[in-house]
Each structure stands twice: as C-alpha cells, then as structure tokens.
Image (tube, rainbow, N blue to C red; front, side, top):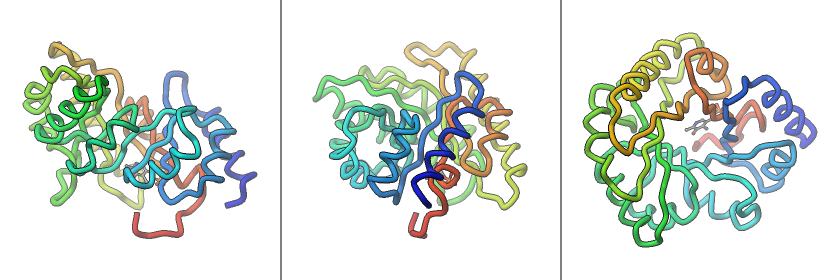
Length: 225
Ligand SMILES: *Cc1c(COP(=O)(O)O)cnc(C)c1O
C-alpha cells in the first residue's frame, strides 16, 4: 500500500475511535518505512507477534512508541522479550507467567500483562479457556514483577465479523466478573479485542484496546502470519 494511504488510514481510524480506546498497530510483515509512516501519522503502540521481528524494527524505531507482544510467547524467548516489550498481552499459563516474572526480577522491571482468553474454545488455539481464567489469575497474582491489567482475546475468525460479537461479550463478561472479584495486585483496566474487520464491534462490546493491521497498512502479502 502506498505511504499516503497508510497515513490516511491511521488518521481515519484514530479519529473514529472513542476517547480512551487505545489503537495498537499490528505491524507484522510491515517494512520499517511503513511502520515509520504509521508512527508519523500518530501510532503510539506497535504490536508484534514475533520477538525477532520486533527486535529488528526496534533497532530503527526504539523507544518513541510502546511495544506490545500480541503473539504467542515461547518460554525460551521470554528473556529477550521482557527487555523489549512494554506489555505482554498473551499470558495464558502459570509457567509462562512465572518465567516472565523471573526474567523481570532479574532486570528489575515490572511487566504489565493481559491474560489471553481462548474465547471460542477452539482446539489447538492459544489462550486460557474462559472457565479457567479466574484460577490462572489467582495463581499468578502474587508474582511480584507482574501486573495483571486485563484480558485479551482473538476470537474465532469469521467471514462475518458480527459472528465474533458473542465471543467479545463472553470476554467482557469475564472482565467484569474479575473486576468485581477484587483480587489483590490485579487491576482489570484493559480489554484488548478486535482486529481490522471486527474492531468496531469489539468497541461496542467494551474493548478499550484494538489491534489493527490490515486496515492501517493494507493486505499482507505474506500468508505465514
Ligand atoms: C495480525 C493480528 C491482528 C490484526 O489483524 P488484521 O486483520 O490485519 O487487522 C490483531 N491481533 C493479532 C494477535 C494479530 O496477530
């Protein structure tokens, strides 16, 4: 996509978002130039699925934006991931949380995290099942260098984004329940849901972080992602 249209898309989406909704540019496969145009147009948070890709772009962009991990984090990547990322949106197991905590303790960093919910209960998908989220949060809430700040979900991918609404509702339901639970050290502040085709519906259902790629940058040519 031409740089001008990235510029326009970023402005258009930023202007359309209600106050208080954060826009994460899901930047996988995009060139440094494309990412720089997006930042120039007002993007403040970059989301990456792979540490290695984030590290390459980080060398060019550095700390002028916030960095969110939005893909599945492998435990052997945690050491370097906690160095780079400002938030990890994809905590889905005690073991991963413990590793993140341990590596953060070592560098004296407090890491805000979201719990990824497998809201569609899809097999072979990352994320914790909705019925297991309370237990997971209870188990990790005392880890000293972790701050649970909310929930994230992908939801199943449908042709029709309206079909995702149910899964967003279920995730919001868990979010509200956990807010009221008053678990020490846990703050239900962010609800990260919705992508290019579904972010408007996600916002209607209570999202305050949306992760948008295609609608900012154009179609991805690389299908691996
Ligand atoms: C790629 C990606 C997005 C954005 O998807 P688009 O359909 O390109 O907007 C959002 N969240 C995650 C976790 C992603 O991997």
